[in-house]
Image (tube, rainbow, N blue to C red; front, side, top):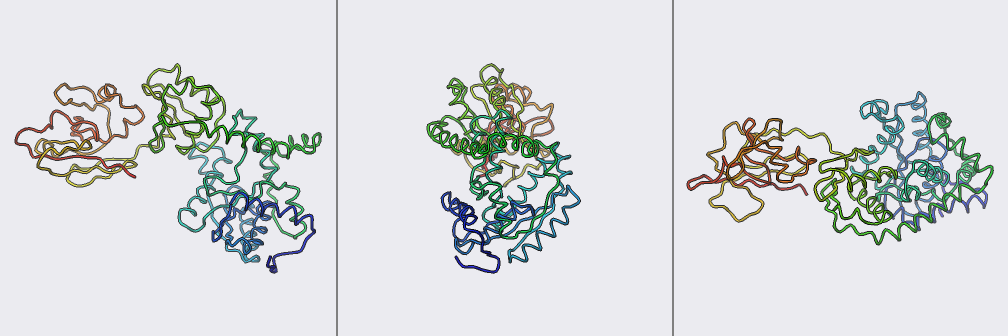
Length: 461
């Protein structure tokens, strides 16, 4: 390997231990030639060791290293840590980016803990860098000891097999953890042998945080009695992961209907054995973008709703997930976002529908044989007609006659409750003329001498 002024010589045993990182990168294909790897660098011992090591092997494996430092706006020392990281990156010849987020403000706005808000803010920065093409992947400094803590934390929370797996070497094809196979002790030896400077985060000693309590109080006592406990816990997680992967190959979700961030699960699936159903639900969670692990009690709530809940019944689950029973299905929704504003004048051409696509209105000569189109009489559309979402007091005259509340019409048509607020309607006051993609009012139907308009919805791809 080509040496430079930042590559130091150190004891053979240290080289062997840290070479495990490079072999792990190759085995798991964490870094590919030509990629730009952003390293999350806090300035602490773990992230500084990872930055130093990756910078030392970048030429051999043909990739570029970029440092990403985020000031979370929590501690007074953050500004000093920011300066420290930028100076050390300059010394190492590593390009570095710095960002600041207001974690206390995020926590207050979202009703989250400060720890959760800081984590989410951090990952939003990472995601932005990926989307802008600044970097290809993010390298995180989690190591074997962190893995043991994570597995125990998940078990204490009552998670299932998915939690007992611990952290994956690569997540979403973006976030990589090259040091999962080296211990904290090995990292500290590497730091000492290479004279790597780092900063101490005193908040890591605050045992009011659950992870710090586990790290600083519980695990040391466990390891004092069982010296190889951390490695044993990680080994357990690895075995669980291998077995889980094998079983998951045979979990079939062909009958599940997926639509963006929603999955509709046939109620018949809930007659499966619990072990199969649990894995199926976890698989479905991932497909609709729910990445975090659920506790056993939450999956039991979903099963209870599916088997014994009434139609329209719903439960709010952690991580902004809603489960709703809809006739012959149970729908899992990755949190309904606040309904965006829709208020657009009725006119020929296109009207964009937030998070859906667009409505296309055009004049036609005949009733074209197109199942995606609704046809109305242009002369029967009032001048004040607008596209909007449903409101209290809306009424609809069914095609063929008979006026009823729009809500009642939706129930008759078995339109799921969770999507009723997101269906665009053409309205004149509280009179609904067109229900986008579903039906027209009898009041705008085509007659013999009508000027015909076709209305269709083009869904966002």
